[in-house]
Length: 76
Image 1 (spheres, rainbow, N blue to C red):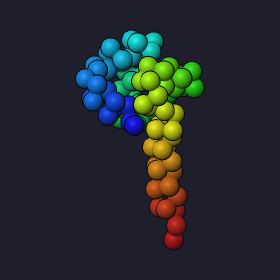
Image 2 (cartoon, rainbow, N blue to C red):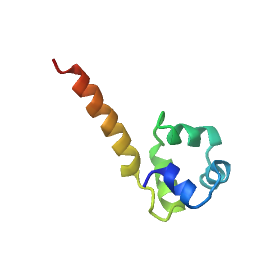
Image 3 (cartoon, helix red, strand yellow):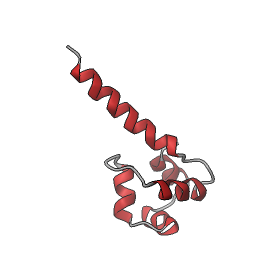
């Protein structure tokens, strides 16, 4: 599940979630708008804080989809 969906479903504010995992709210917003990828140590914290509902794969899927689109643009 995407982090954005998790936070919305559970009515958790970004500021509260970011504090619970020890990051800035700005970092959290970057993940939500998919402009950044959490560090490895933070991914573990997200997994634990969400009881496994948000996994590293949920972030990687976004990166993969962007890579596929970029590759398709290169085709003749």
